[in-house]
Length: 69
Image 1 (tube, rainbow, N blue to C red):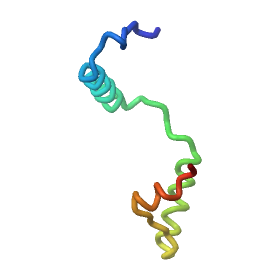
Image 2 (tube, rainbow, N blue to C red; image 1 turned 30 degrees about the horizontal axis):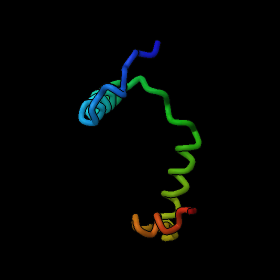
Image 3 (cartoon, rainbow, N blue to C red; image 1 turned 135 degrees about the vertical axis):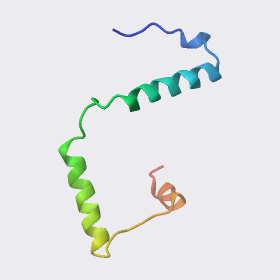
Image 4 (tube, rainbow, N blue to C red; image 1 turned 180 degrees about the vertical axis):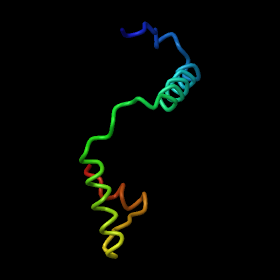
């Protein structure tokens, strides 16, 4: 069931407080959905590249510059 919230009546501050409360609630719940198997595969491949000295690290600015327009 979707709770009824009239977001248009809430101030930005109230919306942010609601988001914080939701996030806190989600992080306290350890029964969330499990990560898909491919997440582990990607992380393991990245670790192998780092250990082989082939890991590529970008600054945030470099990453943003690579983003398609």
